[in-house]
Image (cartoon, rainbow over all chains, first blue to last red; front, side, top):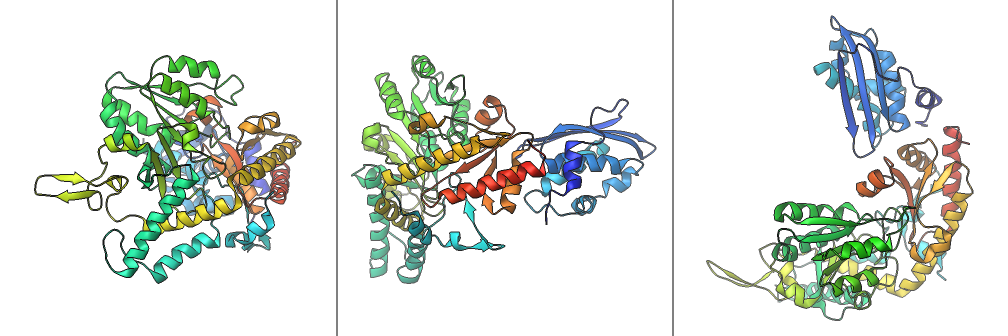
Length: 119
Length: 413
């Protein structure tokens, strides 16, 4: 299977929700020293619902593409639901399994999001 | 000239094909593939004469001891050493360097002393000195790279040596840039100032003739697995007077002559540094690897890799959007078979993943040299091809196809 499906490359080249979020009340910086992937997630959470989500960072297409897709998906979600998400949800979101070596890149933004929600 | 097609037949892994494509292995700087002679030596030991060494008086124990000790003679001969007491087996280059840090340096480095390394070092020749420096209050200095970030700056060598370091620990060849360091010259300059010299030969002993007498180094560290041998066996060469003066790093069986309730007398060299049951299969198989390399000829291997490096740099320089790092083809005499590169706008991990789908194994990352890659070259990671005696031009042609595939996936022009 081609893990560089057009969708993920499109998200990497033209990311959604990229930049700092004004009025964010939760954020977390995650760094993967092996790859050098670096990501900060910004969230605006009101009454347990994620109202808005953005990200900043640099890294590979898998990490940045999935951050772009994840921030789309987060909007309007309950924080408790997002806390329960795991790698299989990321694979579902991407529509493909990047394989064991690259899964950590794909789940980096989810990890940062969950850390931000924990506070 | 090497008969590469004949050599390739000796490496079973190169015959494996995935999706109808044979493996194109361009990551020998990380670890080398193994010829049947080496795989067979391990299997023969376990099938025919598996026994502990230096102990048993029965036939197979004697056979195992002899094969293990003979391998040291072979390894010694490869690097110009006659006395096997100067060849200590370790797990790998990292352990060899740590042995010097924990034994020689522990005794000889005092507060305020200076240890000189370079900006080309692998973590294995940085972190042991950081641990030691912290413990002792010693200072680590760096020989800097030139402005183009391709090789060591000669004026920096002189400047740093003028600070009178106690130890100069330096790589013979960068695993990131492939730059070969003139360690003979540095060794001479360091000795004139009374410093000891350790050379990290992980990327040179497998790939070219290396003679410790010519380099006149005090220590030389290298790994078996990068020179056709198995993992878990490495070498520390040390001048015998130095090794003699050093305390053992680990205590236990095999490293002693006698033990009483309150004290012990250490064994002779090199066993003083080889406590517990050794990696017997590893030593024996490393001996087989050295036999194989010697039969091919180290200079022939070096010439072959130089040619491949030239071919690869020329081919990759011709691809638009691709940048190759390190010394150019006008300085191939100072460049080993390591070619780091970048494809504009594409993360090296994405590059390596797409190469993999084309059947090409390359390394992507900081190559265990974060100060060099991240701080000096200012890259989060780099892609790297590296060559050995079994690679051919067709491997590089396939890598060019893979690079074009990356470009088309990511719309690089």
